[in-house]
Length: 412
Image 1 (cartoon, helix red, strand yellow):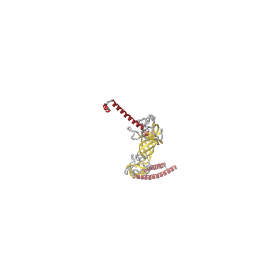
Image 2 (cartoon, one colour; image 1 turned 120 degrees about the vertical axis):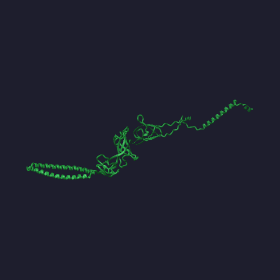
Image 3 (cartoon, one colour; image 1 turned 45 degrees about the vertical axis):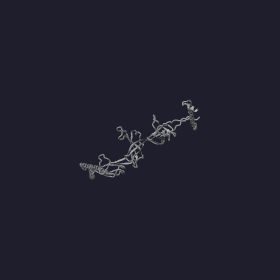
Image 4 (cartoon, helix red, strand yellow; image 1 turned 180 degrees about the vertical axis):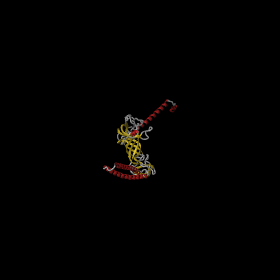
């Protein structure tokens, strides 16, 4: 009977729709119960503040430098050349032909040692002729002196006779004139002899000057004399050779006009040369030439001035003509606080400098500095920093981007 009634119910019967709604409600209730049971089984977090923001902290690598103590120099750089400091040129003192050259370039010589021997163009026969003439004139002088003695004797006798009125007046005057003539002839011959002696002395000196001697002790650095070469003294000529003392050299540096005004005589100067990498030489500024260097200040070019100083070269390691890179020390300080220039940054509108210090927790603090001298690498710190301070290079980095935060309610 019930079966027949159930079959008789249609799909849209009210009783059928009500049963489906009840079944759906039971399913939802059961699902919620399962989820609630899972939540209740989870551990309860510890008590926390009302709201905590959790965000990862990124580790940022900072570029820093350390303030250290050291020495610093304010220098002016310039390029230069090594030159001879003391040298002397040897010239021919007599015209003639080079007979012998006893040295070569690079030889070391002592003062007054023989360098070149010259055969003079003056004929030896002329010298001998002058000497023979000198002998004849001396003989003639002896004869004239004998005649002078006789004339003096005659005049003395005539004077005595005249006092006794025993001679004639013309005889007395004749003896007086003879005495005067004899004296004049002796004086004339004596003058000729002196003149000839001077000529012979010059000729003898010229013969001695055929040997060219070293004017100073040193090294032969250039040689122009050749055997067979004709030399003359009547016109300017090239020296036979040049001798230089290489134990000391001169550095000639070209300094720009905007730097030369800061230089003073006595300043320390150091230099290097490509021939000896890593080695340094030093000296004291001797002179600043008051005229521009040759080739500068023309057609709008920058003006340079030559600055000179000497360097000891007892080992002869340095050679004339070597190029040098010079540093003139304008000022210097020792055991002072130093900061690398790259950490200094640019000054503010008032010309003051500020830097950022970094502590161990990577926190930043700004410091104003008072600086002193500086060079291309470092700057002297007079105040504002201490030894060991870590200074940030560049601007302070921006903080990392904030991640999404989670807010967890605190337990009651």
